[in-house]
Length: 496
Image 1 (tube, rainbow, N blue to C red):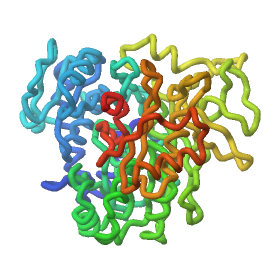
Image 2 (image 1 turned 135 degrees about the vertical axis):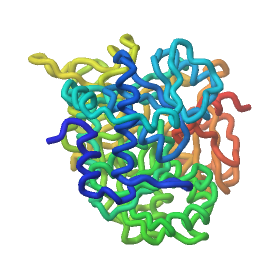
Image 3 (image 1 turned 180 degrees about the vertical axis):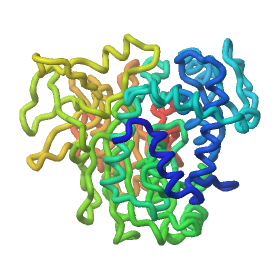
């Protein structure tokens, strides 16, 4: 079995040399072209004698950005994608943590990068291919060599760089592609930013399966008619999108504009899917496969899945499902002990999909990646997700929100996710997010949709005890988003 993602690329380039692998709105690239471009980039980096530090990538959303990633892998380094449209303060924090010797860009960056060589893609993409040097580098690599570093938010405001190895990525992609029944005839549509964990599916599934990915522009997701028109033009058959993307399209009345006629496989993840949103998609695409995934970046995108085998009810809670191959998912109590069947505990993960830790951050790595307290006889590293869950009688994992979203309010333990679920039950609520103001001891709720504020409050009072009903409720046209599509809770906390 292969131990390096480049083996997938080389096999696909040999089998499908002239087939398009990635396409954006301006150009496309075939498997053979991708291979040669990546080898040239890899050769240009290899001759520079860089240390083992990762190579940062600051490029736009296009096919050559993926070629840059793979070129860095050829050079024996991990790549660290950075969205150049992020606030400069965040980019500076990431670069400080990475301390890279090289930054690969498609244009000169506006911020200074101390101590790093700025490499312009157009200037190195035609470098001579040094096959012997690339083979030497490959020979020295292992299946646990770092592949990429993806940054997630940290509670302290300091980004965390999650390091993922080849074997973890390859294990997940094999499992995901098999579960979704993806083959060489499929055409994927990428929604996620290329520096976000969900993008790995759109990048690496084509290398494994010989299919194609179209990189959809971000702005299309606010224009359902344009988006669906593009999907039909490109004959998109499979998507792996964030729950929020599907929810926003639903809120915008997407299916009044038509539907993606060729779409047969739909995977969603990132947050809890409202039952009525999923039902709307099911009714529009009655023959499609729908799959819910659960899992954080630290376990290579997702560790569990649930293939939905029925038409869901509007208020139905969608389970997180069962573990993928080579993942072990279990629950721990607050004191690190076993959790009785049916009870709630912290979701923990072991197995091939675990990240190598956080880059240049030993303290946070040791806090999250720990020895399994249930195993006293040999080393078994686990990741403590900070998420709460329980197992149903049929073995399905159910997600119950974040541990760190549990607050103490008026002497009671309160889960903010529970308040959001209650608000979502109100007719006309598209999205809801609850935040807590500890200074004023106030729970606040923000929502979007057509629902009248009074009706939302009445609905919450029907299902929540008085102390859990938010004191302040505000309707917004749309909830603010982070780059990864999740709700920007920090921005909500700043609203009055």
